[in-house]
Length: 350
Image 1 (tube, rainbow, N blue to C red):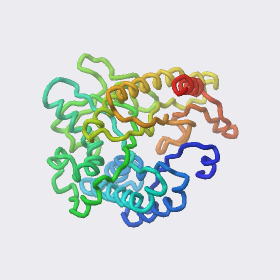
Image 2: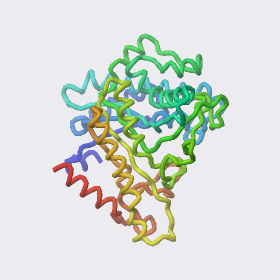
Image 3: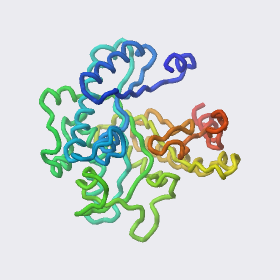
């Protein structure tokens, strides 16, 4: 893949995981091997993609591999802790051995569902701040400040592992950029007894809702139950990262919406994806507004080029700009959004 994209002169951003877990030494060895063999062609590296979902899905709700949920009050945060240290170890190797001669950069890819307070009440405002810190701050605070957010320390206490002084030294300047996956947003209010699933969600003491107090929905819904189309949330996430972490370079790694796979809908209707076009118009406008605000956005990736295997949803959700016919030789059919995106890039990048 690296050689093929090199021949096409495509700019690559490679993100790797480690088979067998996130043990720091093994992950560092994997990263070192990749840097050594591919670093002359790959100039952008992401260590771990969406560590929040790995920790929560794998060790809290148990919906993702390895499917553990019997000791979520400990294992969830321990898994995240070791991913953070594995990331820092990989970055340390790249900075010390390869960065100067290869001229690349390396970062962590996080995701965030923006949280907007549902009212002006101070408890709801604090709940919204807390929700964002439990998502972004969990992984970014250690990289910039050497420890987890106070809101997490206050609520989790000894359930959160401690960073040693050696760890904190390793964490300093352990990212050249932040990769961001951003799809949707939620309204939140304070909830003493959260009804959300899993220890991680309950510990935040927030209620996630999709309606304003007057009953208006936060945004139109896509196919996935969690994906509401809220373009203004993108601008807010970008500004939050900029203000909290001293305006780091940001690459938007994933942003998109899905259609339901429906074999009863004619192909020409599936290809006429006006809703997706409006999605990208709104979100890209929000990114442009954030750039005008002074946020250092360096790049943007739509999710996704092709319809693909969407983890636990399999092939039932279609995020692609290009339709893939799974029953007829995986034939590709560009959707209307693909042509729109082509023209958008042509008109704005010339």
